[in-house]
Image (tube, helix red, strand yellow):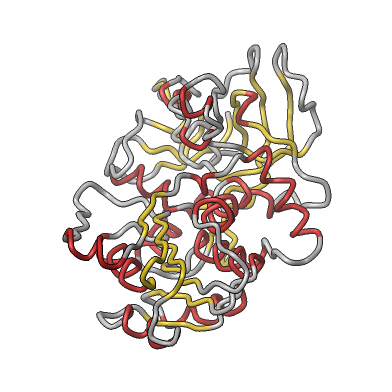
Length: 359
């Protein structure tokens, strides 16, 4: 038996309880977790914004050490450090055939499988494929990426979601160019990664926006040159900071209709707004036809940073080794499994950056 954070039903409180894992069968890997990040997507599973089978072991941003491998697994071996990839591409569907692996239609098929068994006999699913809120997990081999050389194993957990998402939002989805101006809405784990990515991309003015004044120091340490506390005048303030024009690029990391609309209004004529945040169906954003024509702006979604993890991790690792990207700067709290419910509460209250479960 190992300890894990189990969501028994949508809307129910998490249970920190014992579960029984199977041994890895063919094409599967057993991993002892070193750390797991607490991401807003986990919260979205608890409240039903994202719907996947329950009961489930949550957690999708993690890193650890291979304990054992099943038949046919050759790219990792016991003792290897690895990063979990919660959205593996199948390589065969239409988006994958186009090279758009982040849109793989089969990426979350594993969430419907039985992952483990609870102490009371219930079958448990892996919430987002990898079930990282546990001391150990068993995953499909395509959910396992070798840990890049020179990256601390514990902090590497953040590579599995926040960093890939923030990096990709800047470098793949928005394609920020050197000298452009950028606004980042939401200074949580993904927002902090986005700010660092914008700085590395060579953005000139980088505006961080958040409801909390207390996050200004975090934002500036990540690369923000300006900080705006969110209000009804946010778009006006951002235009004032950019010579009256608005930013070239806005990246929305919150997933709320009002924030998406404000990000759109904060960009210049012809600017680009990239939406990273996952919002519910009740978050309706409205535009009228004339403004779409007049402003010539682009509004685009962004899934997992539009990243190919296998290709992007070595690039990001290079920036980490050279000191340009600071993984530790994303973490504002290190907790145990028992601290996850409190981390969810802090997230709802808009406090802190990334909480990291350390095993």
